[in-house]
Image 1 (tube, rainbow, N blue to C red):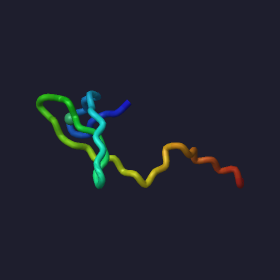
Image 2: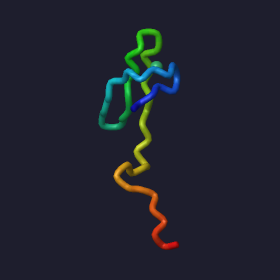
Image 3: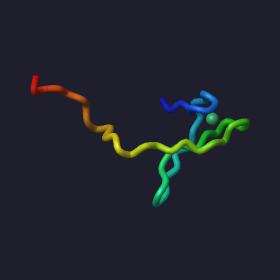
Image 4: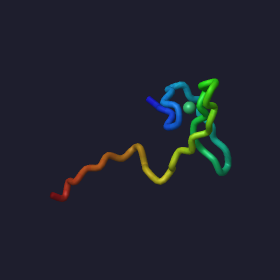
Length: 51
Ligand SMILES: [Zn+2]
């Protein structure tokens, strides 16, 4: 579940743009935009199969 790093709320609205991608916090007293880093590939697991 997504958690806002500013207020700790879990209510978020996904937002995506040409340049920007992240979550918009829906807490009334917060309302900040939290950018999501895109360098990490969520589909991959960190398997160390070459051990
Ligand atoms: Zn927030």
